[in-house]
Length: 328
Image (cartoon, rainbow, N blue to C red; front, top):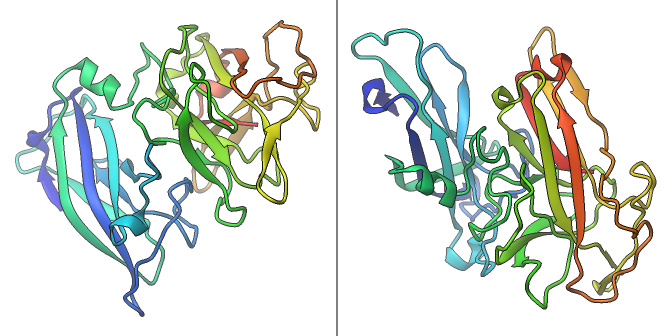
């Protein structure tokens, strides 16, 4: 749909919502996509809402939501799922002519799948607090969107890789100050503020490679040359046997490259040009925590461990147009 460009105010934040139902174009049955897949070229990719502004490329502004706190999934509502997102309308350096439009589209569903839409809207956010409560962050606050899971879902987070062949998912569970709950969790921020939230992420399923962790696209324009970023997280680590039983597991804090390394973060920098693509990565970053638990088996299920990284942006990093942070 074409939307008059003068409906948007430069620098203002907008929230995006839609309801979507996917059906097989041949059988008419509900099609269940995988909301943990970041990319649009998988046979189980979910739809996104996109906007194409004047003289610019199309960009994704809303994504299909996964399970929320109550684990409501598509099957419980006849296949309907929510798309949620937010974006900041850019400040244009050129005057838009009269009648200029921005193009809103819903794409990325697999071939052979029909998309049914309902209750689509884009509306302005009222203030900075609304932006934060939605899970969004800015360069000046926290580069990670929904880093503490307080939205009650895993919006803006995906699983690196295809996700569909290892039965993986991201669930929402009680956070570090609760006395119950299982799994592999993380809460992430670019500051050292104490996490007092109620929820945390739980990455479950069979991870056949260590790099198959939770991943999020971050705003590469924030990563200026010489800027210094602190990445913090809390985690609990568990092993799952063939019967699905979970038990606390030890991991190696001292060697972040070891096969049994504790979870750390990795950041990829990409410029996906058709004729001249560019890529670099920090690799698994060393945990700067100095506590003595280099090989530690938690004795209580509510015991949490810390991750701390410091990253200084180099000129080589800053020249890339996209950046992704993930658990490695």
